[in-house]
Image (cartoon, rainbow, N blue to C red; front, side, top):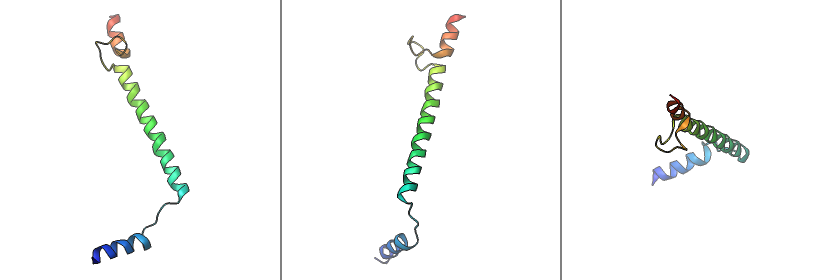
Length: 68
C-alpha cells in the first residue's frame, strides 16, 4: 500500500505534465510524420511493384523490365 501512495505522490508533485497546447503540437507533429513515412513507403511500393503479376501494381521497375 505504501508503494501506491508514493507513486501517487510522485505523479502529483514531481511529474511535469504537458500543457494542452504542447499536447496538441506534439499530436500534429506525430500525425505529419506518420503521413510522411506512409508516403515514403507508398512510393517505395509503387516504384518496386507490390505485385508483379498485376499489371496495375507492377511499378516503375516492373514496367522497365517489360520494355527490355
